[in-house]
Image 1 (cartoon, rainbow over the protein chains, first blue to last red):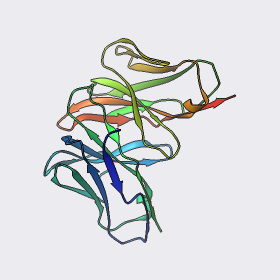
Image 2: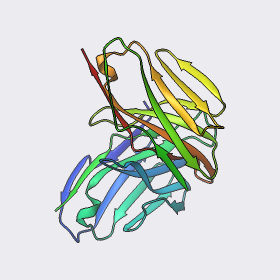
Image 3: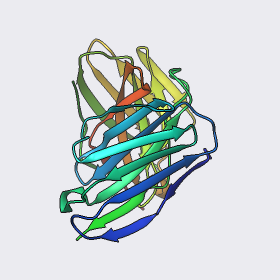
Image 4: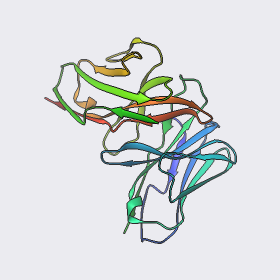
Length: 114
Length: 112
């Protein structure tokens, strides 16, 4: 299994509070991704990173920011959480552009915003 | 942009064969991937098709027709453990490596 650790695994917080989710990898992969998964929507890309300090927006980036200060860590921050951001969040990593290097996913973070 | 359509649910019996279809619309297509996800678990990679035709990996096969913007995942000799959600995903070229757009998923229920 790819070495990906997401923390925390579960979190309950209140509307308006800041929340940071962490994705840590031990594979030294260049590419990292944050998705959210909601019923009926599959996985939707929030932000991605193609190297240290290199990030860009995905399909559903509003209300989220990311940072990648070192290869192994990719942080997702909700500056002021809203109930619509209640979801399961997955981090994924990929070794490169080769199609034979698929994305590998972490175990997810279940986030509830009350 | 990209959009993908796949059935929301499929039911089959143990030992049978099931096919999960995926149609896509995309401005730039490089390949179609399939992922499996058990309830409460992480998505895991099953297969990838960049060219037309059938790719076989054990009991699972995946097919692609680029001219029809269509692909499918074929599961043979179904087992109870195959009960899961299956996602097709289109790969697009970008500076983000293997950038994927996922379909909404097909929930497969295998019955005894």
